[in-house]
Length: 472
Image (cartoon, rainbow, N blue to C red; front, side):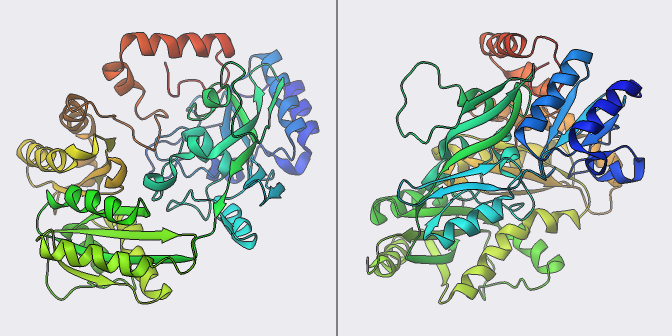
């Protein structure tokens, strides 16, 4: 519904006329999410330029009981940054707040606005001979505030942890408009509750993250990358265990790729080719890295492959001999979601199970969905080094997309029941948003869900911060 005229003018005055969007055509990019599952409406889109402006917006909305949807790069996959359809909400888009406030290579920290694009943070870190290791497919457009709000994962979690593990301090505008300044660059701070962890992964339901102090790491001086063909699916965990042991935990990425996914990339993604002359059912893209110069990393990597061949774990492999060759191998993995779009509808499951159970989960889940949904095509891939599998299931060839997508909830139940039965999680790195609120109610421990609801009520009693997301 339309905003009160006085409130609309008040909000426009806070950010300036050019940063307040009311025209439906200009609003359009802010109203839907990446997968096209959610198309909402908003009363107004605001693009503040500072934390102070965010605080004034929230204060005005709190006084008028106007709900707010915080939004970063809008690259999320669960509808967490999409508005509802009643046009009652104000979208607060943080893209103008994109400054690096400080970088401290001595202490290995970088202090940033929430609207900084992830790739820009990575680039600036490299300029100071450091890395910020969070890396994911949307890094050219996603913003760090959104990464923090969803506790994003990506390809380097095995080595460096999730986004939650990469943040030291936060600045947050609370639901009543107050600002919490927790921007401490401390590795140790044992003074009570670690409040930053309430807001990381909360998807804007408890407050709006406006700034962060992030961890940096020494820039790798050597890397080694290979695409390995596996003897069978069980070999994936054997290779991972062997790689971690032989490298002294220098494994920075370990990504599973199925044959069907490789073929989809070759069909639809320009510049991708089959790296090996013989077809195989399963592949792993593995990368070692170290910040030690002259570490002998390449010889260790070659030793891994040699012993894996001797043990029959790996049946073929191609080792990147240059940065360009490594990029071409990574292009296959990074293009998998895009390639699937060209194959019609895809019912997606971002799940995690204990690493040792990854092969069993993939085998059992593939068998279950193909038995229950005739002709569907499982395309399981992803960060198996940390137990995260993107168990995406492409539609049967020739089926109508809408007819297939209508089976989403039924397939979820088959897959998610299996995941929970293995003490896994129905969301490994994409969050909950609107997409999985009902799944949370179905699977979450009642005590845990009750604690989450009590936190929400205590911090946002009027339910104005991203209502209807994460916790109902």
